[in-house]
Length: 72
Image (cartoon, rainbow, N blue to C red):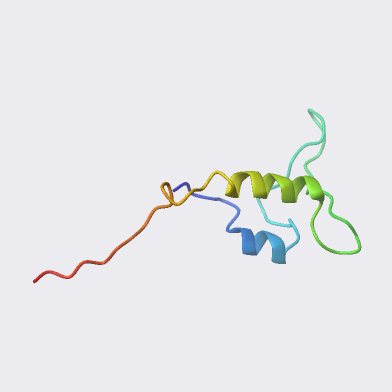
């Protein structure tokens, strides 16, 4: 698993992308800003597709499983 500096997906959705450290520069040298989301609510389609593409990379074979074993 990789460390996500911006927190988890739930945090991103609740804050509608206003997560410190997740700003971007629209053009080189431009001021940093947050990704624009619809004023009516929800997340921009590009962001949602990005999340879905990343989540789609998981399959049952590559999701880390932690199993607690007791010693006899």
